[in-house]
Length: 97
Length: 177
Image 1 (cartoon, one colour):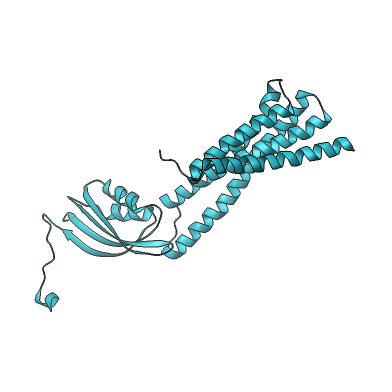
Image 2: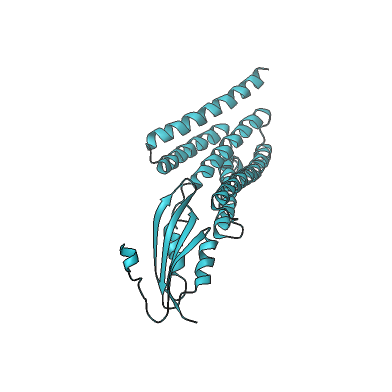
């Protein structure tokens, strides 16, 4: 099976643990080279974040487990890149329209 | 390890409780007995009871609040937080607060009791040590609250003194009878 190089997740999480702790915990996972966590919505109890995880062979289940252990809920998997190299999404006529 | 500002709550509560309640016992018992042993016995018994009740009380209170907060968060997330890092941090906070409250209470109790333990006991010595401790607590409260140290100390000492006066009045009324 191909190695997962990048995943982008839409996550709902409580305020505690902090985004710093969550990003750090995901970054500590083996074969994860980098994490980008950006906050895009906040309410009284929770916050919505977009988490981008990149690595040589990202363990998707372990990333999910880590997020859930920290109290988060994965709403959707918005992007997955797998294979030998990272392939960015190409804009088509349909997207430009 | 970073200082957790929340820990200050139970340290201040427990310390004042232990300090002034034990001082009250010492003042009260010294009216009816001049024996150091009796004063120490009564005050130590009170100190232990206070420490245990403060610890247990804090445990029950924090347990209730933390579980309530978790329930609210679970409702927002539409999932259970059982066996997660979030729940374990909650349990850790409950235990820490209970321990802080009980330990602070016991340590606070030992301060007015100290002269009696070392056989140089007098109500004046206990009151003096207690007031010095209140000054120290006031400084600590000022540090945590980032407000004027002077005002925190004055508040702490003034309220503590009111309690000591109230207990002394009870002592005097007993003598008058």
